[in-house]
Each structure stands twice: as C-alpha cells, then as structure tokens.
Amino acid sequence: SDVFEAFYTTKASGTGLGLWLVRRVVEDAGGSIAAGDRRGGGAVFTVTLPVARHERIRDVRVLLVEDDAALRAAAVKALEGCGARITAAVSGKDVELNDEEWGVAVLDYHLPDMDGIQIAARLAPGIPVLLVSGDPAAGVALAEVRERRAWYLPKPFEVDTYLDLVSLLVGAK
Image: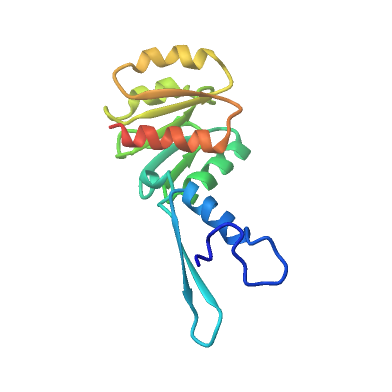
C-alpha cells in the first residue's frame, strides 16, 4: 500500500493523514514527494519544490532610492533575499544615474532633492521603474515617463506584492 494514501498507517494509533496531508501541501506548491528506505532502518522522504517565483530577480542590479530608512532597509532585505544586487540611496544625487546598467529602478516619489519621476527621466532608456509612494499623485505623474515600462505601487504594501511587481518589471524588458 502507498504511505501517502489517506488513512494509511502502520501504527496502533493515529489517523494515517499526516503524509497524505504533506503530499497535498507539496503538490499544491507545484512540487513532489517520494519515499524510500533508509539503510539501517527508517524512511527517507525527498521533497522537490519549484524555484521561487521571484527567481528572475536573482543577480539583477536594482537601483533603490528611498529616503525612509526603515523602508529602505526592509526593501534591501527583501530584494537581497531574492538574490538581487542592490544599490540603495537616500536621494538621486547619491547615485551616478547615467553610469549604471540597472535591471530595474525602484524609486520613492517624494525625495529630498529630485522626485522619483525626475530620477527616472535621467536613467538610460529601457530601464523599467517601480514608483513607490503614499501619494496618489505619483500614479498620475507616471505619465511623464510613458516611454519606459513603469508601474506605481501605493504605500503601504505587502512585501510579496512589491517583489511580484519588481519581478514583472524585470521580466518585461
């Protein structure tokens, strides 16, 4: 009999639902699970899961300009967790905008010197932009950089939504 079938058990007590449930969860995530014998007794379970959905961010050079220190730190942590290479700055004047070949620029709208739209306008053509702001005017302002792929993300936001949008922009060149 299959150890992954519902209600299968070799024990006197227990429902026999543990491995069945594990298989359901693993398969729902797009993976697979296999059982085998371990030398000397016992079992070995091998779980295979697909690559993380933010895989296309790996090794991408990301320009992050955000003046809120806590948000900047959280964004760096989330992006680095996906394998991105981050250059983080507090303002546009802290970065050589023309010199770099960015995979994507994540820009706050309201910044100390120039706003996110002004920074976007100075980037090389074709570099996609994610404009982040609590100000709905930022979404309207995106019309000024119509020639590049750009998206507006209102603050506050979920980290997964943020990473999803960065992934989409990186993949949409």
